[in-house]
Amino acid sequence: MYGLGKTAYGIDISGNRVFLVRAVLNNGSVRYTRAEAGDAVVIEALGQRGLAAAALNGRECFARWLDLPAVTSRNALKVLPTVLDLQIPFPVEDCLFTFPVIDDIGTGKSRAMAVAIRKSDIETGIKRYNDKGFDPAILDHEGLSLWTQSLSELPASASTLRVVVYIGLDRWVAVLGTGSKYISSHYAKPGDVDMFHRIVLSGLDAVKSDRPDAAIASSKVMWCFSGPGASDQSAIEKILTLFDAAAFMAVKIHAEPESFLARSVARRALVDDGLPCNMRINSYAHAAMVRRKESRVLRSAMVVALSGLLLIGVSISALWRMQSQLNMLDSRFRAKVGEVAGAKVKGQKGEQAIAIAQRVLAAREYEQRPFMSECHVAQCANEIVASCVSGQTTVESLSLSDDQASLSGVAAGKQSVEELDSILKNHGFLTKSSITPLKAESGSRFTIIGQKAVQDE
Image 1 (cartoon, rainbow, N blue to C red):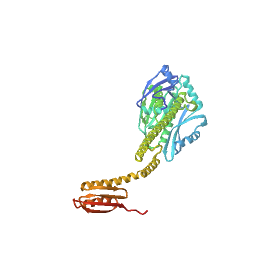
Image 2 (cartoon, one colour):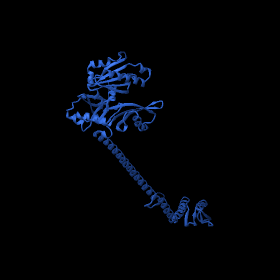
Image 3 (tube, rainbow, N blue to C red):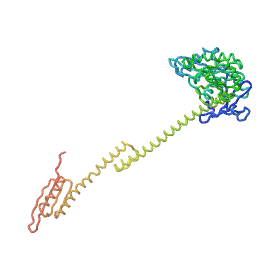
């Protein structure tokens, strides 16, 4: 949760005793083992690596709910310090504070949890752990830690009134709430049963006023005991004697109660349970946490930079491929234009290349015009020869040009002469023909003269 990875150490100092737990997160579940403070690996983990978490007690750090008009989380963070300043007996400027929860509770209202500590008290709390050889990177709120760990180990229904009791060697703590909702924490000197009885009764009344529904009002109390003194059954009986046993739903003792708080802070360092809290902030932040934050910022910046470089590289590559395809298409286009024009088109693209091809073709049309005319005359001559062969006609003379034609010879009959005359007419000639029969031989001598009409310009 705080960037510690998958391992954290939880510390609880109760009187002169130190309880140390190693927590390992694996596949969403947390496994706990007791650790020894003198172990070399533990010393490194609790020192420079900053893998330790501990709690600040209620005499140093407090948590309370604040009511305010319905606002967005961003706007709430702007007004909550002012609201908090009105409800504490010392200036908010002398405090460190955080707001782990901001909820919209309907009816135009919001509710936020404030956790605060005076700067002088956090200095005292850090010194207390330093004197024992520890420098925890996370200083959690004791009441929140006890509450969330109890819910994790002993779940209950949403309407259950719960009192989590920590029986320490130097303090007794009672944490109250309903279902999964934390309400308040209360502290008493160890062994002061009367004081403890009064503060718990007062706290239960506050819980019922916070949830005035019938289910809460009639609900029985689930007692959950923890701490080094919870292994002493007589201490539990001494506390419960002053309460109405008929209002008990159940009395539970957490497994391995001595290490319960150490387990709690270690687990909360690894898992987000909805009530995160670390009061080592601002100038009191642990050096390891500062390094982790800077490393995360640096990694984020590197990811953004690498993403930008990747996008630039992809864009350049795409542009290069596109330009290559355009060059290839342009080369093919100019080659096709050159084929049509009959000459290479160099240094020009698109419409300019087409204009050059048009000019080349226009010039070539003028130059080829005589050859195109000759082709017309040759076609006419070919048709005349073919007709003479098929009609057994002998051509004695043939003169053929664009505008004049002269043909004479001996034909087998009139039909053959008419066929030749028709060929010339088909090619645009105006013809005159004469046919003279031969006396000594069969056939007729013929002459055909043709001339194209002159067009007025």
